[in-house]
Image 1 (cartoon, rainbow, N blue to C red):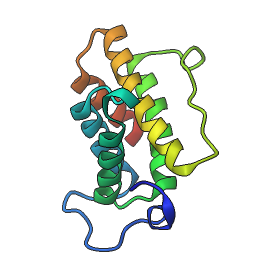
Image 2: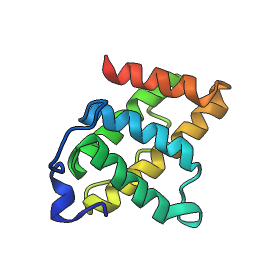
Image 3: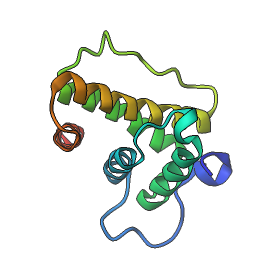
Length: 136
């Protein structure tokens, strides 16, 4: 479950084989969101919550790091797609860490879909460009 005391800190245990931390979470989350597809309440709120919890655990990040990373992914996706951040909706966060994280993840998935439609590029190229920007 996303949220609660346990989700506020990174899980203990062996580090994932492919690295851990916010950069790894960004990669896992973008890949996972692509696999889930539309994640609105009618299409998979529970799937999003379970996936997000698993991705956070795999990357060894807590709720705050996940929220910060999802916000950074917004900027990276906007840049990779050449979209104007002033005209793109800004997700409202700040009241509920669990709800904020879920809302940001759903927003990032929706942004990916819009960016693919606007740019005419494929999702893999868009994600690669966003991850490259995030790593810079």
